[in-house]
Each structure stands twice: as structure tokens, then as C-alpha cells.
Image 1 (tube, rainbow, N blue to C red):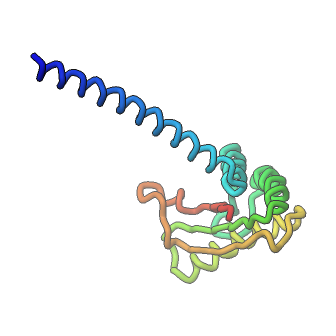
Image 2 (image 1 turned 30 degrees about the horizontal axis):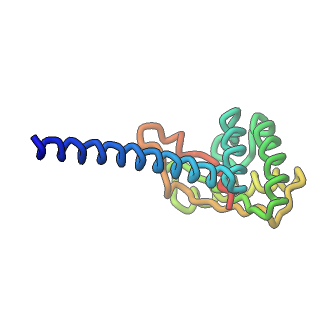
Length: 158
């Protein structure tokens, strides 16, 4: 019985230690989330993602010409970019296409679309040195089932 009592006490001690460690892990996870949320780049990314959730950046079919519908979304992103540029951040604009067409054509189209967005933002007052645009063509697809989803503009704060 002494052995059983000793094992019971050890089990209770381990249970208490597990509870303490779980609380410490929860505190650490909260601190990590707060550090990430406190990052200016992450805050700008979150705001940009929210603006994109409300609208899209679209183009005339097969061209680097922005649709009229893209204006409202890009105006919202321009306002975010102005504030974020003041924090010394750079916005990378990535152009992507689907895999149809030739590789060279897709690279030119994706670069032209990224550049059109860059031009829109600089014309809206965002400093040119706070923006970088690049086209990736069809090299980084995100959807095999719906190739239209691969035609996209991605905004990445650095």
C-alpha cells in the first residue's frame, strides 16, 4: 500500500506539472501571436488582405489593362500602402497567369499586369521606392482544378 500511495503522489505531481506546462505553453503561444501581430509588415499584410477580400484586382481578358472594377480595391490598397511606406516597408506586387499560352507570353503578361498595378499605386501617391513589381508567368499555380484562379495579383509586404 505504501508503494501505491507513493505512485499516487507521483501521478498527482505529474498532473500538476502537466497543468503548469500547458499554461506556460498557452502563454508563450499568445506572446508569439502578439509579436507577429505587432509586426508592421504583418499589420500591413493583414490590412491588404482585408481589402482584397472586399474586391479583386482584375484585368481585361488576356491583357495588362486593369478593369474598371479594380479601381475601388486598388484605391483601398493605395491608402494602406501610403501609411505602410511611411514605416519603411516595401510592397512587392506579384503577377501570375495560368499555364495557357507560351512561357514568354505569360511572363510578359504577368509582368505587365504587376506593372499596371504598380503604376496605379504610384499615380495614387504611393512612393515608387516603396513598390516593387515582378511577373512570374504561370510558374506558381495555386489551383489545378480551376486554372482561372492562377491568374492573380499577390501583394506581399516586406
